[in-house]
Length: 148
Image (cartoon, rainbow, N blue to C red; front, side):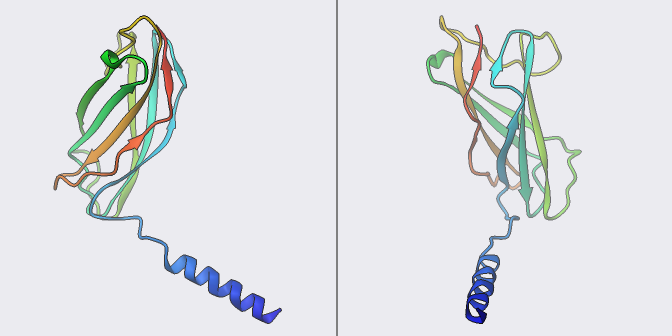
């Protein structure tokens, strides 16, 4: 029994000792959630992303790319400036909310709707850049549908 306990404690120690530090020079970006899986005209969709950064200098840009499975003409690339009002502290972490409207007439970015004759089944890809031009890994959302 004592041997099993020692092996278990040793295993737990190895697992915790090998855990990577979550803060690195390049920003880390992860997908957390999206507000809907089907986007109809007149509605909005919000994507929640989580970031971490060792230097706290993410105040550069967020690259967004829409990739559509069935209609390449509906794709787009965009860059959005990250606000200078984001706190600049070492080992920073937080959330980035990206909201698009679809034919809403609101003062928010409009997502490009279907160009072809059918609904768009698509994903968005995000890359975060910091002031030193370090880039995060690419984060991809689950598929969602934009109704025609």
